[in-house]
Length: 152
Ligand SMILES: [Zn+2]
Ligand SMILES: [Zn+2]
Image 1 (cartoon, rainbow, N blue to C red):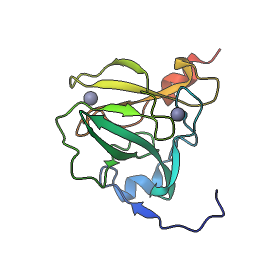
Image 2: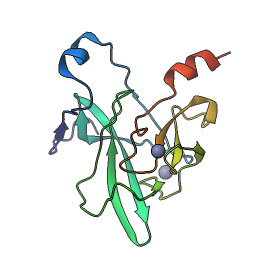
Image 3: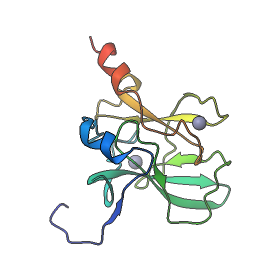
């Protein structure tokens, strides 16, 4: 898959300042999986040169592609579909098998924090969460720090 030449969209998020970014050690989600073990990482869109997390967002009959920054703490989510609205709580689904991704907990915005598994063990204790509301300020991938302290 890496050998394929295809158009790639680069996103440079404004939610992290560039100088901060250069100094910071970026923590990046390298892999994430749906409950059926499909990889959710896509080369089609890159954030700071890192491949995006690709999900589909469903609301009623509309299904849109949603790309989430894999950089921990970066709040950037993009969609190239104008139908996505900031205030709507979407159902996040796997682009490959269309399964609904599991909800880890409610988000303070009224949306839901959806779990993305970090490995094929598919355990919530090894996952990060993304809010299902497109415009939610708590939308960044998070859970890595907590994850470390949860390791036995
Ligand atoms: Zn899947
Ligand atoms: Zn939220």
